[in-house]
Image (spheres, one colour):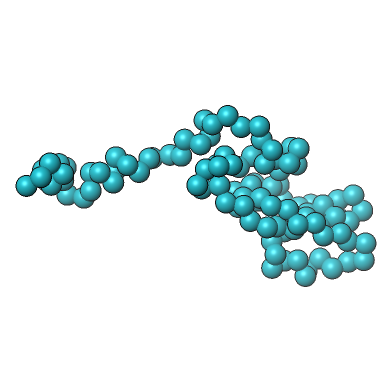
Length: 106
């Protein structure tokens, strides 16, 4: 019996090595960041830093009308077709999008 098998039996089975190798929380928040992902403070900070494996950008749409703006998902784009509306693609992480305050209307 090798050392890993002994450890697994002592700990009640399972993979002890996987428990050791998989971190409980991502350490990327401790990295030095310049917060460019907030795009000048327009959007919330992401849960993960650029360069982290968990930092995944998605395309969303910023719709502007008369000085007001809303950020929506791709499938909602056709719901806001009004004259004078401008559409701008933006790249955010899912957690950034979910933390944008609720839209109060144009």
